Image (cartoon, rainbow, N blue to C red; front, side, top):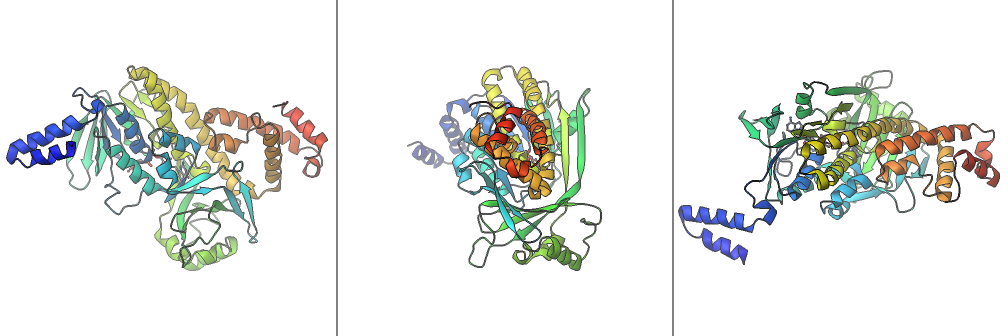
Length: 486
Ligand SMILES: Cc1cc2nc3c(=O)[nH]c(=O)nc-3n(C[C@H](O)[C@H](O)[C@H](O)COP(=O)(O)OP(=O)(O)OC[C@H]3O[C@@H](n4cnc5c(N)ncnc54)[C@H](O)[C@@H]3O)c2cc1C
């Protein structure tokens, strides 16, 4: 009925048609989107977090303009940057559920039930991530980002602007300057507030760094990363077990592989920049073939384009960013990597950024009319969690590249699994707290440190590897861990 009305009016020639069409659009907007006194929000960066945040803001009935430095990835053939695929888990899923897109994303994901550890001698062992039925999801970064952008654009009060690089922010005036990198044209977007979701090298955070008492630090790892490929088999199948995150832990470095829907795996080599075995030391095709043949021997037959990939794909760095506060009055707020860039070893960077959106929305339920309080509460609430997941991610690098192949670590895992089965609510392994729960990251880290202390003591007991599962020793472990009934 409404659609027919639009077509009919637009048949009238000239100006009348334009006016009537505009009137139709306004008439047909949902009630929340018809206000002319809508507050204006500028979101800088249409990456994963910016696109999702735009949807949460749109649901509050405000005008949202999202400015993205790159071209529209739904039209241009550009990579989504960083990793081709990533691990999505419960925190991220909750945020996607909040905007009704969870199932659509699950449908384009591959569940990974655990780690498949590949040893140098070619033996493999499977380590489940959690309990039966628990898994993390491998999802294409590009597809996820595209779907979030499209969802944002479905709201009439959201506009995405592409090729718009933020070059300056007037924080008090909530005005951002953007330059179109193609045309060089500069525009100023005036709003009521600015959200910095422009990633680890955020221009919004860059401006906030000039504020009095704004703390900020940036730390690069000695390791970088390079993406490589395991293509599908000739008939489109998976060359390795599909429902796993594959790891080749090698002490100071590692290779990992996550499955893609087309049967391929995206591999990432995390490797020192410098040193005897490093990006710097692999200079020729012969170096690469010899190195991979020696240390990742079982992966090499599945990597027919290894040498080409190695020399074509970029070597990228890994950075940790910490800052505080994340807000400037009620004028600017940082979310996602702009506030807390972390290393990727817990698969939580995006999940944490998505959780920012959940927490933001929960606070907005009660504080939306007092944004200064809301923004500063968001900052003080989330900052310890951003710091905690940064620490946890670094810790997990050591676990992934080194400990997953360590007997003592595996024994600890077995004991912790038994404790969790006997006391499911009192002893939850750290990985599960981070990945499969909504406990604050800072609380998970505290529990994790307590677990370390207890397990350190237990693993020091004589013959623990042989007798840990005897009733008597298990009782002693429970005593030390302060575990009673359940
Ligand atoms: C190798 C690797 C693997 C990873 N794996 C995982 C994983 O498995 N699970 C997980 O949860 N996390 C993972 N992460 C982390 C995850 O990629 C980030 O946490 C996530 O992308 C953060 O999203 P964001 O939107 O905050 O920032 P970004 O994804 O960086 O998006 C920022 C956006 O802002 C735009 N932008 C930047 N500057 C400007 C400007 N001046 N003006 C306008 N626009 C601008 C950028 O073009 C981009 O689109 C991984 C990271 C890396 C590097």
